[in-house]
Image 1: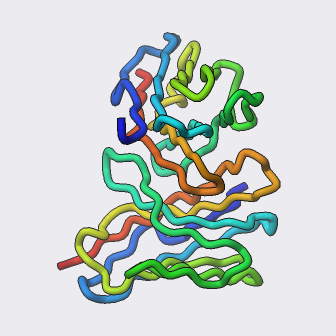
Image 2: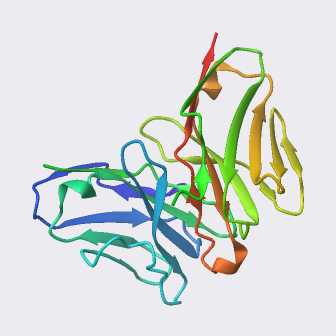
Length: 113
Length: 114
């Protein structure tokens, strides 16, 4: 597709359940980022993938969070044993040139009840 | 520790007037700055950027000014249009970080009144 696609667009889950969020980057974009935005806050960096290099996981808030990306394609962000403070919009972005030039997806709004 | 600060959560401007959105940063290592615009239920879209070697960058109605000594940047929109109503995020990165991750401010909601 022409843009970054994220699914689902909305997810409501019970506390303690696991969730998986998906991101389809723009074809050919080598860099992929996950950010989250909690209510009233700015975007918070979570993880970065660049080609086949080891990902930069420095932004992941706890070991309940993990992400995978196969080559330069789809990425999944998994949150295990969700907590209410995980409620946020999770945004994926891909980029060909750095810095800047990110293209963001529309995000997944996660609500943990 | 908020490294990028947008101290005005909201701003209202009359159509046709100038909108000035401000941003301050604390990390002197930042060397690239960007502004993103976000409409409800959409992802942020890139608007304009500036490298630390410059003090001004212009693109149509949008101009970004950088004052490194004050660690301050601003986005000017002239003339403002109702379609500019959105949340504007200031972001900064450091090329030495390798990942070019962006550090974002909390955003300023701009309302342009017709």
